[in-house]
Image (cartoon, rainbow, N blue to C red):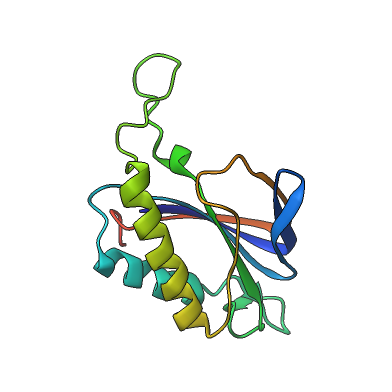
Length: 150
């Protein structure tokens, strides 16, 4: 599983001009899944995302996590995170999980984040054409991959 995490002061997602998820300060998480992803990967990612200390403390140092600031998470599925651009100019998505596998992993990630954070998570609609809008705070953008747990 690969995610792009953005520290935001606000973000929202629209499907067919209807807002389906919206947050103020917190994390925008774009998540892409592979067939090899497991429940262990889901739990590891939930702990990693909720524990990332990327929010500033009173001294202006990134020492706080999303729980510490009572922030929110907006979770968006994005299979294109597994695009391979090795050959040619048209990306290949062969490593991305097929929709029937990915939706289960997405739902497990959503439930895991809600349990870890202790509140509801805002979302888009899996597989839909979405418009995502955000104000990146910092900017702070981090890529986290369960295949590279360093």
